Image (tube, rainbow, N blue to C red; front, side, top):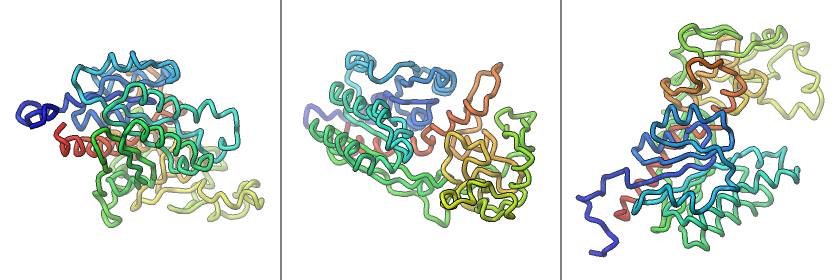
Length: 364
């Protein structure tokens, strides 16, 4: 037996040997997915201090560090990994820089350059396993050079790299979210798990949120302060009353249609001011999912936008997840941003499962 392969009976099933550091961690969606799969998540890094409470309150014994990736050093990261552990470095660089709006903004290089800073740390730390989740548009952003440079940098460090287009409903996540998931390993070929769901058994909006009690627009439920819906203007109240599940402003009488949508430039944006459909996955949950006019975020039958609680459930956060300290005020904009920016916990679990299966295959 090779000296590098440990007998299974000694520590093969000791998940605490698999040590994870999460860059761009936010409130801990990806971290929580790894913890649910019994990985040892040591620390999360993010530049937003408002994420610290939720990250640490839900991921006990995992430290939150508020720091920019540009100033994180090799020595700092290496010092956190336990001796002889399998080093796993994961990161979901903010996706906003890769949007169609910011693509033409040269000043945003400082943001999309975060991916190169992630690569820098990988090259310096040389973890055993790397994972990155991001939006599909990263594949074509700057003609694909940003992503290609990242992959080529990994390959120069002798990583085997896989890149998968992951449609979240195929993994039990109740939203039409499609993401790129990159996995890289020092041990050989690594693969993302095969889908667990087909279109006939996708988890739906009904499955995720229909059990919640009804509330009005602008109301906070007395027993759940996260079940909180934004106010609607009188005009938007009229609009949502004539909105159809799965529809848009195109279903409205002409007098309710906004002037911007009557212009040729606005007619190409149908996916706003609509209701979700009960028996399908929801649209992708974004940082502004609490606003009726920001997408198809209307409740399937109640005359309001989805609540923060409903958004969290569609992101597969458990009901027990704490988003704000008990005595603090719930701010729609802040918590909405936290929820929308998060990696769905179920996606985090599948990423962790893919890595665990790979490590077990290679007896490490």
